[in-house]
Every structure is written in C-alpha cells, then in structure tokens.
Length: 207
Ligand code: GRF
Image (cartoon, protein in one colour):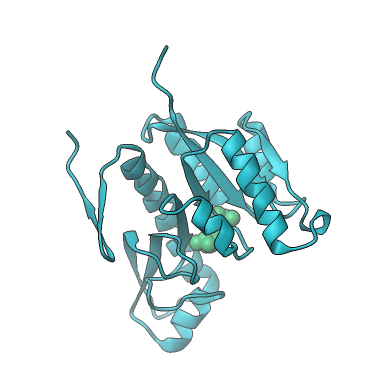
C-alpha cells in the first residue's frame, strides 16, 4: 500500500483565494499533502465552489442547526476525524473556534492573517496598518491557540507600504504574499520540518 498522504481539512467562510493557492500548490507537486475536506459556515462561500471544482468534498455546516458554538465545533471535530485529517487550515474562516475544538486538534491548526503579528490582530487589519502609518505591512502564518491571533509564528512576509496605498491596493499586495507563504508553511509541516521551542518555530533543512 502507498504511504498515507498528509491530509488537510480547510475551514473557510468566503471567497477562498488562499484555499485556491493551497490546491494549486498541491497540484503543482509543491506540497506533499491532499485536501481531504473543505468546510464552510457560510452556504454561499465561493470557496465551496472552488473545492467542488477540484473534486474535493466541500461541506456547508449550518451554525443555525446547532444549539451552541460548542455543539457546532463538536460536529466539526467529528467530521474532520472521520476524514482522518492531520492538519486544520483556517483560510478566511470567520468564526472563532471554541476551546474544545482547539484542544481536540492541539498543535494541528494553522491560520493565515493579513498583518505582521503581533501587530494588528483582529479584523480590518490592512486599514488599521494604514491608519497607524506603518511603513511595512505583511502577513503571518501561525499556529492557533485559544486566544485569537496569538500562537507561535511559522512564516511571515513583509510588504512595504507605498505613499499612494489604499486599503484595496495594500490588501491586494498582502494577499499575493499570503498565497506564497500559506502553501509553503503547509509544505514545511507536511514534511515534518518544524520544531517548536516555546514561542519560536524553527525550520529544519530537508533530510
Ligand atoms: C485573507 O486576507 C486572510 O488573511 C484572512 O481572511 C482573508 C481570506 O481571504 N484570514 P480568502 O477567502 O482566502 O480569499
């Protein structure tokens, strides 16, 4: 039997360009993994359609069908475990995960965030970076812990701010970098090349 592939579960809520970058990088053979399932909390998320076009099981899980956030996340865990998922990738997933979910996949959840963390956690961060007047913006792939946007940092990319930037132009240049570093981070994890020392994530050379 061929060795089992490293399996990703991707959680989405929206347009899914980061999901697309992961699917494309896998397709090009750059990431030794497969997307086992895509799950959205929004029925109309274009990300679901992207998944279906790639032949990946793409599920809308309706929050209204559950009595609580905890119950919703318990079902998420069940769905992911039933599909033998090794790593959960948040890709524009706009629902805060419960502690129970994060414990169930401890150390196996990553997120992409469009700022250079720990600067600008939360929402609308490209606008916040412009408002603050920073000269360098960027994006971060990090492990997910119970507190939002805080876990150990896997990769970051720096995007210089230009004088004429608007939220749209800056967001677009940051997004280009997101599409580079997210698949790369998944590749490093799939190749078992990360070592975590406290908050520091060290990257080992390939064997
Ligand atoms: C990205 O900017 C990502 O950094 C943030 O949400 C956005 C998702 O975009 N977490 P997309 O759905 O991947 O196009």
